[in-house]
Image (cartoon, rainbow, N blue to C red; front, side, top):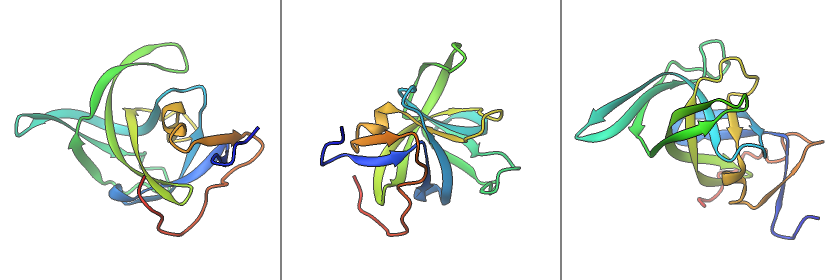
Length: 152
C-alpha cells in the first residue's frame, strides 16, 4: 500500500543527467539491484593533482543520445559489485545529479560496460529509498515532466 509521501514510478523512466548534458535517457528501475549503474566505455582511472579521477564516454555511438563527450571527474568510490549473471567485478563509482520525478537528486552510479543490455541506466534500491518511490511494474515513464525542479 502506498503511503502519502511515496511517489509512484513505472518500471522504466525518462531521466536527465543535467551536469553532463544528457537528457531523456531511458532508465530501468531495478529493485533487484542495490546500486545504480551506468553504461559507458573507455573507462580509464588516472591521477589528477594527486587524487584518483576517472574518464569515460557515456553510452555507445549507436545510442540516440550519444555525444562523443568524454567525462572526467573524481572517483567517489571503488568496490566489488555482483552483476545479474552472478559474477563479481571491481567497479568505479561516480556521483552526479539526476533529474527524476521533477526534482534533482544526487545519485551514485557504478560505471560498467552494459553494451549487451537494453537499458543504459539501471536505478537501484539505494537511490529509490531517497524518494521514497514505489514501483508499479505495469506502468512506464510516470515521472516525466519538463519543469526545472529543486535539488534533493
